[in-house]
Image (tube, rainbow, N blue to C red; front, side, top):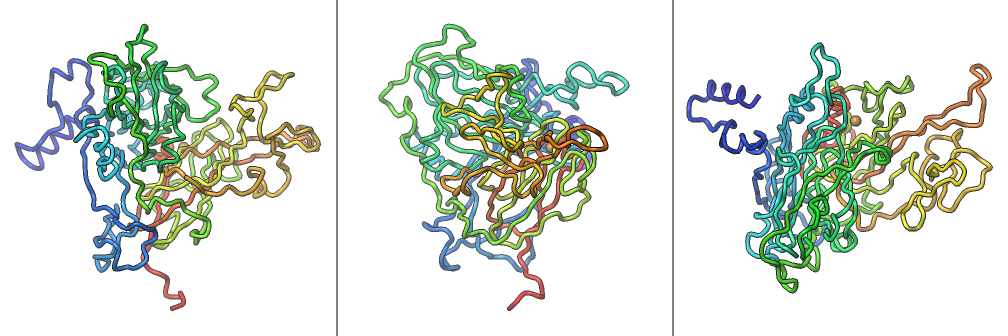
Length: 533
Ligand SMILES: [Cu+2]
């Protein structure tokens, strides 16, 4: 594909154009993928930064000038419109996005990382040394074992070939399988991890034995200090499209077994996959060289998170000016669930606008998942502005005890559900009764409405799958128990600022996007002629 691209490039622009393939035959022979060249070598940018100490800015004159360039440029006379939020410095990525071919292009490696630099990097470099952030590993994950791709192509005739329909087993990093990262004994490194897979989530089981890690950022947006301090040695999920920056501290002695120094992940598209998914080696670490002085900065986590810009302040309820509901579904609305059909609000992508928002407004959206045939938590992704999660309802959620361990039913030996849809039975602590015959709006987490405090900013978040509940009511015609479909959902808040124009939201399982699970967001700078003046 890249060679074909080069041929076309040369045809159009003549000899001397910078080709994508190959750059270094020796590295290709060692097994590097072409994406090594176009993808994993990150491009770094610095953008103008928001300098105000409060959000929202009080006076227009205090705001920065300049106009954001959306994917569809705004009206020409908006030049000089103030930038009121700006771009957080962090780890971002790109991929081929031609609707209908997105999955195959990404499966064949057309993804890569780019870094927006800023005070975040300056603060880290003040602690770890000049230019340190640019020496740290950028790990671009892709998924090899899923159809369609050229490495595991389907059998002739189009039927499933070896591994063509599976969810794994392999992840690559920068085009290599199970690469080895070199670390000095006791050294702290920053890993910028990007999951560019077209389908699989990578669930990180936690740091290897003797290692420690601390998360600094999610989806290209840095953590505030409270979140930095609380995210120590935790497992985490990178769904397709998610990113995380983590600080990793190596043990002071080499590992006895190489497997002790391996970062293990599980491949999932729904939390229900985790019980059966096998742990995979994503990468290994070789502890080598001079030990790092344990008292030096290089051997310690930076004590506090880098400076947190005011425009990343939590979105309070009082800031919200509008709401929307979007329904992601497998199968037509009200029809038979069908894992081969993906829709948003009952429609496959047709190029029409699915959500209109006025520029500089803040909205709260309920993103629902009516997928029942097989559990799939479609990773919701919206371009341009990140969002904060304020409520999650997973009807399949397992009840956990105070140590986070699943509660097991003593009779069935199966994990106990948090949500109970059968009345009149004794509830365990933490369980929540929901009436399957009440209005669907009543299907939500029990307890008070959560307050958005120390919210993490995301641009990809998996929507919990729906659950088909078998009730105690009998259907007089079929003589079977009546079943009720309960959708999963999350609620998010976002500031639709800076960028007027058109962009998309979609499922980040790219085969779903290609089949229609995508729609257009229009952010419009004008009010209608019927507005009050
Ligand atoms: Cu999907």
